[in-house]
Image (cartoon, rainbow, N blue to C red; front, side, top):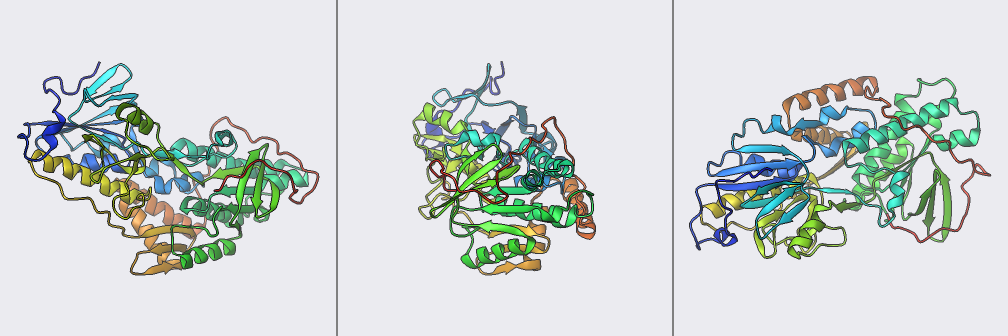
Length: 469
């Protein structure tokens, strides 16, 4: 059994209210989750003398999720965008890293449980992120993997490149067409990036690699339920992104809802028209839901959660009635700035992690922390080679300039220097040669035999209730 603070009794919650009682000599902060929010909080607390930090994660590495789609499309390897947590925090002498999963929380006793192991805390920061959501159609996950983990990316990579390999051996024209059809569900940044990358693979990277198929005959179809791709961006940037995708060869279908995914067939509805798309490879980029720890916390504290499972937090990211429990990142619904939840993007988690660390440090000094204010430095989405859109608020960029800016920002925020160097070299080589050196097919899953349709054309069918993506 682990007890991280055997010699220090947990603080009473009232000690965190400025002016009531003096702060103790040392405070124990437990952080659950080593993503952007948790890691930035840990680093911000790393040089505080009167604080001890325990970071818990079920993975031993920090994953740079914004570049996960590049693992899925063979541009970089998983290790290039991952950093071991112990290596990142090895100079933080007040920080301990534990590999494990928090299964329950005792807010009254100020303890978290990892199975039989118990860890006491004075302050608790939950930053376990989110996973992909299928809007109540969880059975679709088997047919359309999402993209949140390294395993997800490797599975996507296997499906994408296995489809080309299977098409090389397929003699039936209809079956080959299904193998060379790639459907990406969701027109947000991840969906746009995936669709653009697959188009570059099919139309450029592997065009000379096969003998029996012409990879440029591949169909890449991007589906979006709203009336434009990249809905969070300005309309003019959405239009630029759609135009760039079409130039790459991607078929963009907006105002289109998925109603079923089964047996290598995607059923969609656009207006009154219902269609079936035979597609061997379907990739999901349409929605997210909070990690299960949000529900665990709600059961323990009666805190409110939204429809996506995110915890509704106070203006300092604390949980109502429990000022020493904080929830940040994709697990939090923070609606105190403009009445709408902050977006689930890395900069929000980074700033929230640093802010909560400052709240803890300020309270330990017996002072009242300043309110949180998210600084939106802009939004970025890459579409393909020399193509991107950037919204910095005061200006909007497209084309090569936006693409170069996107490269710089993503290299800058990679955690370790060796990752920055490796990714820059890899991108430079890929740009010159148009080659993707990480096109590995790994794992035991094989490509299924595609369902053969009675017609090469999409067929009109009856469908279940639609899901807006």
